[in-house]
Length: 146
Image 1 (spheres, rainbow, N blue to C red):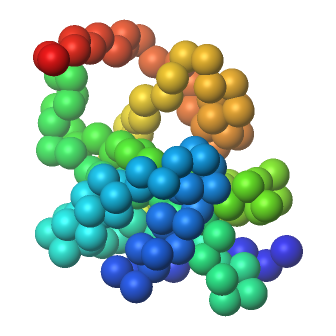
Image 2 (spheres, rainbow, N blue to C red; image 1 turned 180 degrees about the vertical axis):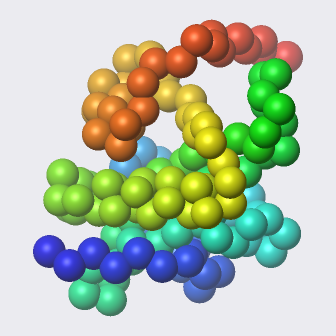
């Protein structure tokens, strides 16, 4: 299968919403799309990518370069969200997206990349391991403010 990775465009947001609905089973994708629309307008467009197969958007990844993180003295790359249409999972789409984003981070001088996944998301953890990620030293802490 030929996977083409290119910058994500605002016109891709309907496809992102479709993919997210297929993955989560939820119609509540408006938050992702709203935030992504804003990020495409103000953020680093090189870190937002779409994957196409035969001209159809079948995956996306959104990354970010932060100027400092957890005591690092250099910029750190973050993978915020990745989604691949279930019909295309396991076919190299996610790998193509991840590798392209990591290559972009390297061109920007980023030496460390992070992401956060739920501890029981074995398929997501396996995906990131195929890209070379390992368990880090940090522990995620959170607090419900309701």
